[in-house]
Image (cartoon, rainbow, N blue to C red):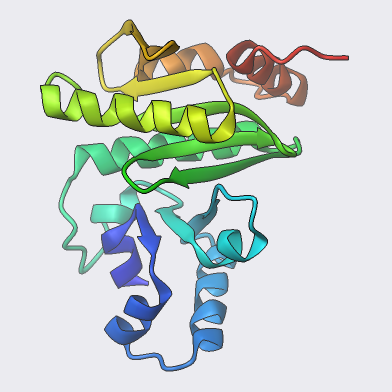
Length: 212
């Protein structure tokens, strides 16, 4: 558990993880990962793919609480603000999807990644990218590239880039990316009651879903 929490958020490479922690059986490793999920230490999402086998084998893990990442005993991960922000966004998306039939995936292509893909069945509602700071040009290009790659792969035009403080609208390759500071994204979507109807309403606002 400590090793996985030190590495989160991370894509779980099961062969490498087996070697690292000394477990020979893939089935045993799968059981351990299931136990970590069931005891609310970590939460995992699958890779966005139309292939069931690829979804089952390619999981990404998140700590179920940001404090588990670096505030527990024997934690050596350090305070990585980017990882903490990504985890916060994931936990909020997880909260929003409660009571709905929405699914959360990550997208990984050959040369780019998108942190979160939110789907309703086989329809993609939104693609989210998370970066603490995009003032560095290299970082900015990488995050935009990830958003667009996710958009092309999922046929989705609702693209969001969540940052610590930056706010703007980016137009690139025919796509529009809404850059939103995390405090604004959270306060616009959160409410004290957190009722089911308000959750659905927020999803509709974010993803421009037309109800029939």
